[in-house]
Amino acid sequence: MIRLLFLLALVPLLHAGEPVFNWELAQFLATPDSQVVDLDCVVMVQRSSITFKPVADGANGGYAARLTVTQGLATLADTTWERLDHIAVDEVLRPEQKIPDMISLRLPAGKMRLTLTLSDLVTGESRTKSQGTTLLELWRGPSVSDIRLGVSHAEPAQDGPFLRNGMRMVPYADAIYGQGLPVIHGLVETYNVTTADSALWTARVLSEMQSLLFSTRPRLVSEQRTIPGGFLVSFEQDVSELASGSYFLEVMLLDRNQVAQATTRRAVWIHNPGVVREAEEQRMGEYDHFSAEQVEEEWSSVRLLTDMQQQRTWESLDLNGRRDFLANFWMKRDPDPRTLVNEARVQHRLRVEQANARYGRKDQPGYVTDRGRVLVMYGEPAQISRDYNTLITRFNFQLQNELGMDPGESIARDRVNNFELWTYEDKDNSVFIFVDTHGFQQYELVHSTMPGEYIDPRWVRKLYTR
Image (tube, rainbow, N blue to C red; front, side, top):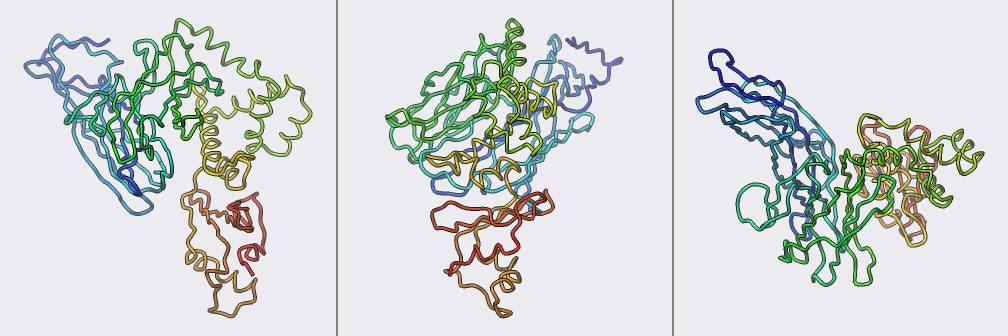
């Protein structure tokens, strides 16, 4: 704890260094039937990391922020702002004190990179963080926005900071609850739902292994339509009795038959020192209580990340050996063992969920399809093209060669099966080509330039319908 003594002659500056901050993104649909997204960038700045300059009634400090959004070589947004702070003479500055901040941008759908720089207003020292994100292209049917976390429930408001469609909730980017902040507060929006009766909400807290801990129907704060066919909903959940560790917070939209129509989820961290022993036991023996069916279900998606030797090892193990295999598999891939969450596992599970939501059918989970497998293994591609002209421009020579066409000749558009061309710019511009060869929306991987992936020099024949 730092007690501030304002001795102007002896302490000209209360120097802290670079601003320390966390930031999170939450996306919402801007307008109905649009390809435009409202992206909320939530920032939490550690107050004690800001340099304060003593003045007569205390000390003044603050930071300047610059947020840029780029897509390839194009700059979509470049926004700057300042936040000022003041410490009274007798005020005590604690390390856990944070300054909440938020800026909202309206952006087109697509893959982009955000870069945020915070500069100390007194010293000019700065810190920069960057992250990539993909804004959703379409919101078809009943759907739910991202969850925006807060430190208190949303209240009606027409002006001021932290607004979302007539409601204000102080945001929270740290996503750490428990001791000192025992209640999770969240805000979501629903789209393409016309009546409150058909929008039955359930909030669930899951362990990192996706075991259900408890669920509750959130409190509907406002039934005001935020967009035609949609509602804004806030909810809260007490987590004071949960053991320390990483969890998922999930909100589901159900129909009148209690069938899930849409789901949104995000990771949260619980810190309750009073039950830390239980948390340690849970982390050390997470798989010990898994049934044979649960172990096989877990392996079915993990298998996509393994090589042939690991798969042979798996086949040779009994149930306990397979439990140990899964625990060790993720332990070795934890990018930062110091944190409560295994970021690699979280990323994998989110990719599996995305694959299931996009490509799953009643008789088949999405991650076992060709497109789903590639999404789980490599993440979101930089670009997905279904454009015929793009394909012809890039592969016309191969098309002409394989099909015996004359120079300058090209296949008529109506002779080409539906296809998707995925490009991974961060992996040497490797491509995956998926074709709906039978016309049933079951896209097959016909060729890839990714090392170790399926290669077919004559793939163009599967593209061409005779």
